[in-house]
Image: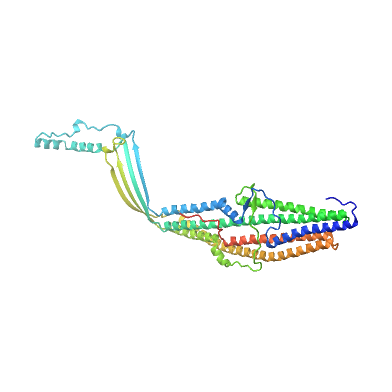
Length: 516
């Protein structure tokens, strides 16, 4: 800025008055704009420049992206699908089991293939069919023992021992008729496990939604604080320019100029710190929603202050009802039901098991590999009912029963602790939100007062009634007041997200996988 060299005294006064008015108008407009935005909790700043390829991102879009692409959500969905498969597998144990088999055996060498068996001539039974009846009767009486040997030779000669080709077909059906309640208990365990997996999915989705909402609010707050710091630095630089005009006009000392420069430079580290915090917060949000870290984004959901600051208008249930509706509590209740069924299974080990089995088999021994016309299938059909009961298992059944009962007791105790924890979490989240509501109202009034003090201090300084130090203090107080109200609004949104999490509400962007 050019310096004024020996202007006339009247011109000095005119130029000084013009400069003071021009410089004072700029901070007032900035302050007025900042005050209007801070009062609503939206953008206490000038919007920072972003690249043309930046992506606008609302809170709902961030939630939808996180819940649609998050690895944690996909794992939770996989658990529900796995539970569906396990339910089907367990249900199959109560249904009839039907198995079939077909086996072909090729015999290359057998002890029964060593040669044919031939009786000696003295042992052969060959009556003369052309002789008289008396001759044939006499021959039979004399060679009756040879007739038995010849018959045995014919009998064993037709046995299928050592046949080169063997086909065996088998069809078996079995059904458990009674298992001491173990099959029914297994079916109920599978159903409870499926419902527990669905509840775990809701919990996982709610937790991810809470993390995304917190990250989004913190990123928006960090950008807002960056803008507040930028506005404060702009005001300090404007005041520094005003002091430069005063110094050039001869109405301010070099000390006043140095103080203005120091005041402005002291705000630069705060701006750099706020800018770095905003970058880190946005990077954390990108990480949660699986967005490329190099992709520029614009957070388009404003951190609006709630309309009703004194009364919590959201109607919410009692803590006991919250615990009854929470998905984690429902999952724990399913675990208790599973432990109860495991006790039934352990008790069923002391009872007998009754099975029905039906078997249909067929065998074919052709002389050639596919010579089915040379022989016929020999069928075999049987049915059986079996009853089994372990008499002594080394006290294993008693130990299993004791273990199942202990696990049931532990599950019930853990369920009680979880209910108390959920109620406490809900009470804390709602109390934190109520505290943030009252804090917003108080801090917004503080911003209005700090703005008024700053304006009056600047006016008094222009008239020579206050010092530059007072102006700097007023500016810092206004900066702190704006920061406090922005932090209070962010605290409210984070607390509100905590209430939603404590209630276990499933975001609209999340959908439970369909069951088979």
